[in-house]
Amino acid sequence: MRRLAASGRLAPGDALPSVRDLTREPAVNPMTISKAYSLLEAEGLLEHNRGKPMTVSARAARLAGGGKRLAQIEAQVAQLALAARGHRPPRPVLHQLPGVRCRLRLDTTPAHARRGRHRPGGMACTPAPVVGVPMKEATPMRAATSVCTIMLSGLSAIPADAQTDWPRVEAFAGYSFLPAGGDDFPRRDSHGVQASVAVNLSRWFGVAGEVGAHFSETSDLGPGFPGVTAETSVYELLGGPRFTARLPRAALFGHALVGQVIGRSSLSGFEDSGFAMAGGGGVDVALRPRLGLRVQVDVIGTFADIVENNARLAVGVVLH
Image 1: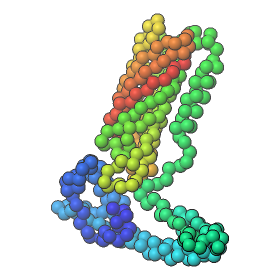
Image 2: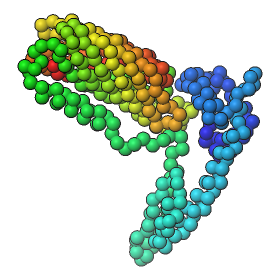
Image 3: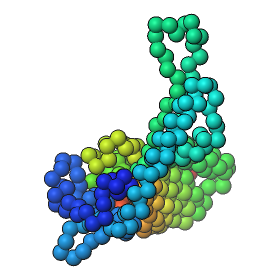
Image 4: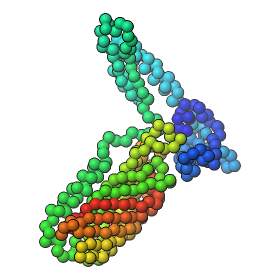
């Protein structure tokens, strides 16, 4: 709808189809349509009058300037193509084309070798994405993995005899899986890392703090987003009490955590954060005196739209 308003195909006062009409299309969630309408209404692009359908607001006319901008770009691209034939691309003009990626294609074949065939030179330009906001080229997955490695390395440096009495410190790091439901648009099933540090004040009671980072990428966003790829990232910051039952070769634990969930998305308008609660537990199986294998399952409930009510699974190593 932003594209249609920017191009002038949606004029101020035009009525839009209702949520019920749009849900007749396959693979369209009514909650997704309602959220999109609410977002555009909050931005001032749409207006909702009681008893009448949603209409395009007068403010949307300001976006019609996008057509003039395209005409200017086309004129500048034509000048670039003429200049490229003479192998003299004017660099200052290249910097006057925001939102367009251009690549110069020169024909360096000698004149006598071009007889009988055509190899045109010129400028190849493609428009930059309009709906999506480019994600940073940094790899947050790699950064999160590095943090987990540093945390485990720091705890392993503590002498074994320093952990003989209570309180004791333990650290966990491993792979984590965060599935997505129908209300988590545009996020899909996410993979990432999860880490925690727990201070066990006694044999059965302690305090734990957890950090999770999950990432997903999908281009299957439904008919409303053709050709658009969405990259999402979810970060959980949780903490709370933990209760543990210790056996000779294993330990069973449960906890209740509260904190915050932060959601990021390459699609404009689909980022949010909110209060989160988690309850769950797991089992630690001893492999060595200070090293164990952990399997943990939590149920997370948040006020963030990108993570509604989801179960989270983690598998990794725990260092005591």
